[in-house]
Image (cartoon, rainbow, N blue to C red; front, side, top):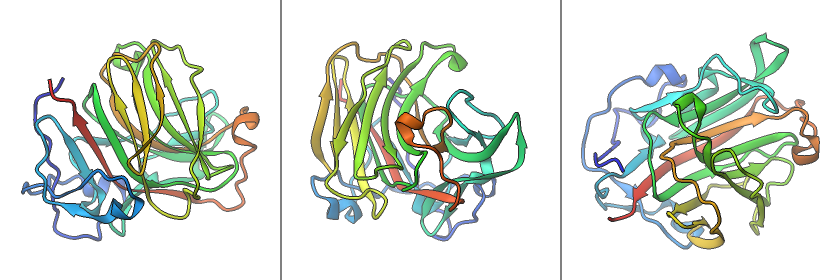
Length: 271
């Protein structure tokens, strides 16, 4: 486990420059102010003066782009991903981060669309992972928050997912991969439309189980073949191809499409 304290704090203005590359500043470091974990949606906006425990990470997008995070740029995952990741598709405006799906300005390799992906530069292990986000409502798209590592990191493919499918934003899909073995999908009825407002989604990753939460309430758990490899924290928005049975065919009539994020938080478990 990483033992360094990561504290992301205020920049000069709440309305930041819009491009991912425009906020490549190191913010001033002050005492962190973070939302408390809560069991109610309304408390998503409640601010606590709690200090981050050792080894924690908190990125509040009210302050623009945090340090030690990266925008994917100029490449594609291929396969079912019908986007090229572009840094211009990650923006920071109105005290939030936006991940954008759009028609690509410079399409290559027969990939007509661009998408946004934002990720940590460091790796994290067992602990609680939380995000405040608002999903895209549109056939053929995915809004996500997840942990991932794989061959590009010289690691096995381990992943833990929170994914909202734009074809039905009243549900959320949970999944995970351990050494490339997946097929653990579970669909949970939210009881609200995740495209209409911000909600807090989370999972706790233990050595022997994963527990998923929505607005602080446990909704699902898994306890077989759990991932073991420290991973990056990631968020992306993308449209699919060849997976119409899963996502429905992508409807590009309303591009650009935008997913929004307020903050993310990682808290390691005490040893």
